[in-house]
Image (cartoon, rainbow over all chains, first blue to last red; front, side, top):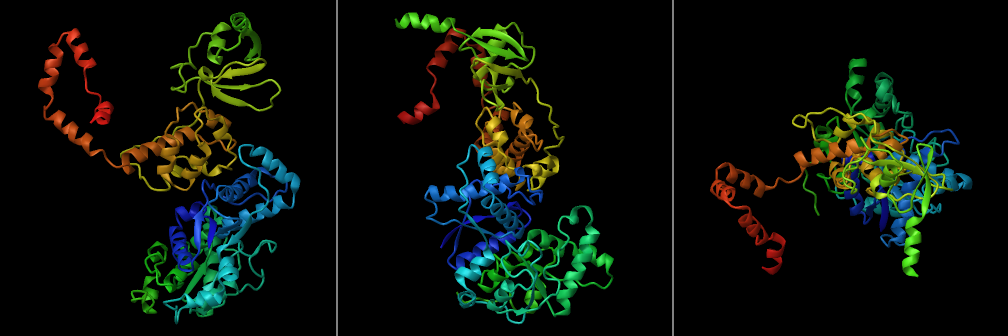
Length: 303
Length: 239
C-alpha cells in the first residue's frame, strides 16, 4: 500500500527517531510512506480568527502537492495524506475542513496561490494511528509482532491535538481507545491515566517553562499511580514537554522520579524487531535501562 | 515593406513613469537604458548590465495590472504605462558569525535568522526572484535544518534582495541562503583532494621553472602557445 506522507519540520530535526521508527514499522506492515515532494511547514498553529485566511495557505499548499502526486503518476487515485506529528495533523486537517466547508475562502486561497494548481478539496488528512486501526487492523498488527512487549506497562498520552476539536479528532474526545488497542496488540499492558488528554502546556514551554513542568508532573504522576513504566505519545511538542521538562519538574517537586517518554512508533519498531530503528538513544530520558530490565532489548529476534 | 515597418517600429515611443514623473522613451529599451535615456545617471543600482550581478533591482507596476512586479532593470524591457523605481539597496540585517567557530548543526540557521520560522509559505519571494529560484522552498528547507538543500536551491542567487523586500514575514532570504552555502561549502561538501595536492605541489615549487620560462617569453610566443593550448574538454572528447 503506497500512501503520501507529510513529515513536518520537527520530524527532520528534534524528532528524527519518530520518523525513522515509523518508517520501519510501516514497512514491516507493508505500507510504503512516500514523502510529499516540496512540502512546506504545515502552518504550525493557525490563527483561530475566522477571516485570517493567510495562515491557511501553508496547509493548503501541502494538500495541493498530494493532488500533484496523483497527477504525476506517483500515486494512483490515493488522496489520503498520512501524518505522524499530531500538531501537523491537527493543523492540516482543520485547514482542510475549513476550506472544504467554505467555498469563498477556498477561492481566495486558490486565487492567491496563482502559481499552483487549484486545490480541489479532494485530500483526506489521516493520522498514522487511523491507518493502523482502519486499514491494517489491530488483529493483523498483533500477528506482525515478533518481540511482544511482555510485562511493559505503557500509558497512552493523547494530549489535545489528536482528539480536539472533536470534528477532526481520530477517536472519542472523552474516552479514546486507539492507543490502548495498539498497546495491547503489541503485547504490552495498558496503564490508564486520568490525565491522558490533559494539555501538556504546549508552547508555554518557551516563555513559561514552570507551567509546563507542573503539567508534566501531574500527567506523569497520573500514569505512575496506575503502574506505568513508560508513556507513549504522537506529538513532538508533547514529547518535549513531558520528556525534556522533567529536568525542571525534578527541581520543583523533590522526590519526583523520572519516567521515559516514547513515540508510539518506537515501541512498534521494538515489537516488530527493529531495535536500532526504534532510536532509543534519541530520547531525553534514556529508556534503555528500563527496556533491558524488562528483557525487551538486546534480545535475538527471530527473523 | 518589411524594411519600412522596421523603421516605424524603431520610432515607436512608450510612456513610462520613473518615480512618478512621465517620460517618453523608445520602445524596446531595457528599464536601465530607459532611465538613462530619461536623463538619470547611475551612481548606485547598476553593475554588470548583463543580468549577473544583481545590482539593478527594480520594482514596477504595469498598465491594467494591480500586481507589483520585480526584476532586474538590465533584463526587463519597458512597457507603455509602466510605473517603476530602482532599488539600489535592500535594507536587511546581516548576522555576524565566525565561520571557524560556527556549529554546522540543524538549528544554526534559526539561531542567526530566527525570523525564518515566520514563513507562511505564501511564495511571494519565489515570484519576486529574477533568477527564477525556488526561494520559498529553500526557506522551508532552512526551517527544517536541511542545509544541503538550501545551498543547492539558492546556488544561483545574485543577492539582489527583491525576495526580502517583498516578504510579508520580513525574512532576509538571500542572507539565509548565503549562510547555508558557506556552511555547506566549509563543513559538509566533500573536499577536493586533487586541489589540495596541487596546492602542495605549487608550494613545493614544482611549477617555478615553468613560470620563469613564461615570464621571459615574448608576447607573440605567448599568444602562439595560448592558441595551441590543449583544452580539457576537447582533449577528453577526442581522447
